[in-house]
Amino acid sequence: MTLAVCGLSAPAALAKPMGGASAVKMIDTDNDGTVDMKEVEAVASATFDRLEKDADGTLDARELKGRLSQAGVKRADPDSDGTLDKKEYLAAVGERFKMADPDNDGTLDAKELNSKAGKALIALIK
Image (tube, rainbow, N blue to C red; front, side):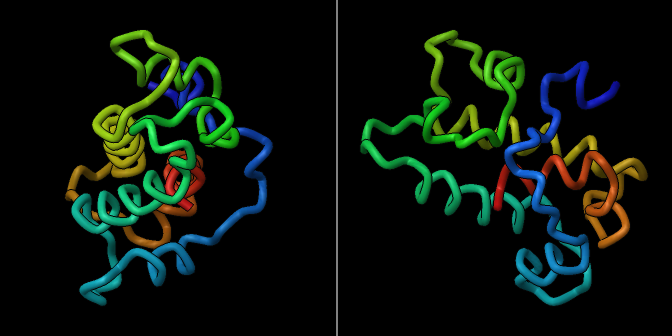
C-alpha cells in the first residue's frame, strides 16, 4: 500500500526535509539509536498540543498546516467532522509509523526514517 493510496503523502508545504539521523536524535529518548511507537507518540502528542491553537480539542486544516493532504485528513477523520481530535491524529501517526517499519520490528532507524514513508511520518510530527 503506498502513501498516496492511503492519503498520507507528505505535502509539498513541508518539503524541508529532516534527515533520519536528525529525527532519531529528536525522538529517541532512551538513546538506543532507534525510535519506537511510544517515543513517536510522545512527540506526536506534543506536536498536537502545540498546533491546537483555538482550544477546541481538535486540529482543522489550518492548524494542521499541510501535514496531511485533504485525502489524508478525510481518511484519518472517521466521524467526518472535518477535524482531527488527538485520538484521530495519533491513529494517523500510528498508520504512518507502520508504513515506515517494513521489517515490522516495532522500531525505526535512521534508514527507515529516510524512506518516503519515514519522511511522511516526520512531516506529520515535526
